[in-house]
Amino acid sequence: MINLFEVNETNKMISQENLDVRTITLGISLLDCITDNLEQLNENIYNKITTVADKLVATGKEIEREFGIPIVNKRISVTPIALVGGSACKTPEDFVTIAKTLDRAAKTVGVNFLGGYSALVSKGMTRADENLIRSIPQALAETDFVCSSVNVGSTKCGIDMDAVRILGDVILETAELTKEHDSLGCAKLVVFCNAPDDNPFMAGAFHGVTETDAIINVGVSGPGVVKHALEEVRGKSFEVLCETIKKTAFKVTRVGQLVAQEASKRLGVPFGIVDLSLAPTPAIGDSVADILCEIGLEYAGAPGTTAALALLNDQVKKGGVMASSYVGGLSGAFIPVSEDQGMIDAVRAGALTIEKLEAMTCVCSVGLDMIAIPGSTKATTISGIIADEMAIGMVNQKTTAVRLIPVIGKDVGETVEFGGLLGYAPIMPVNNYSCDAFVNRKGRIPAPIHSFKN
Amino acid sequence: MKKTIITVVGKDTVGIIAKVCTYLAENNVNILDISQTIVQGFFNMMMVTDATQSPKGTDEIAEELEHLGEEIGVSIRCQHEDIFNMMHRI
Image (cartoon, rainbow over all chains, first blue to last red):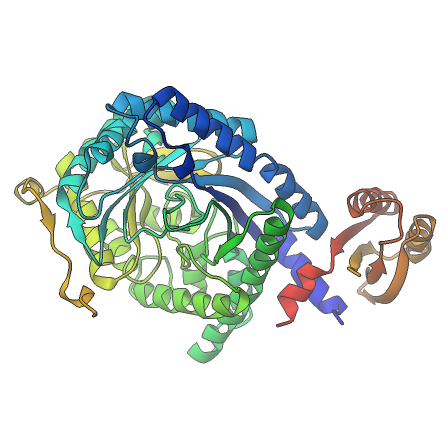
């Protein structure tokens, strides 16, 4: 029988330590909407989304009230649009019409982001893929809730450097088209290596083609809960430190498992996975960097950071895996700069650089995320940074991603404000030595030797 | 039968249990278990209840209890038991 102490512990986690379900993401397949008539395609997409997701937001609120756990976001992910629009779309502008339809559908249903304006090009781009990629700047500038991603590499296929080169230009153009809003468009675009089919977090969520017609994926979050638990074990051994993180991660993930099962039951949609990532928000007490400090570092970025993050990431997985029947998505610690007050403080203090962040991405789940860089950064430099991050993912057989925001008209020392969950960020310096000759080579980098496992 | 956990937290004063139990009785919510303690003047109570025979839904009960709490000067939450079962039991 549950006792008073346990009830209090749970409710304290919710009310004081920022425990919440970060997102319920409904993945919807649009493969059955495909037709070669653009107008019909848009209509099919709008109808499919608004029908399947009709009760999503209301169900989320219902679960929130009944269990007393905040469900911060209700979102949707769809089949990569490069595939869905491949037949009907002959130009980038054709793809933009689909982006607008997605935006309209998102607004009708009441979700706050819809991901899947995506292309999967780890081996190479089809004409449709390239049209979609080139349409991204306009699509993101002219819609509010649509999120985009491009998978340019994988351990099995290598890295498509042609796509990487184009994306340097695309990111800069997106920044330019949204410069009135501090280049916010770039906050809705992710470049991936080894992208998972079932990631519930934005901006990189899409409903992979290996998935069923519709699926419920849940992302939990509790950096505050983990930090609070660690406050009790200051100075204790690594064994105690790791066990504390593991047990706390178990409890946090259990909430996600419960919410996922309930949402699945009430919506009549199969339960996919719980993504047990530790995802911060700009709110005080909801920071992953603070956990690193609690583990024993003066600032995130100090020596020992990569090791501490590796330990944290591993223990979160160990605890979380026991807590859920299906774990998937990204499932690791997130280190987005603008969405984590502790990270922002570390950058301001000069303790955290892009180079250190790159090292940290080798041991945690996300990548170079929500990093504001000078608007004067060259497209080839951006491509070089992407290539680096893709190589880390490819060789280490993990997911890595890049979400860089070149802020047009601003430079190092200034701050950019995105607002809400996207937070704010100080602009970070970038190594500006040239990689033009490297990035301008044509073709792709082959798959690494250890991908040959047969 | 799914149980609802009602937690009452706040400054100790005369009549808290009486008022909450009266509300539950009036709404046909059966009380299965009560544990209660006072720590440094703070009242802390947990009730395991069965609301299946109540004409009101858990939603409505939760909202009304919240208002009752505000009147008395305590915080009252009403949650489905599963969130606690899931977190604290394997």
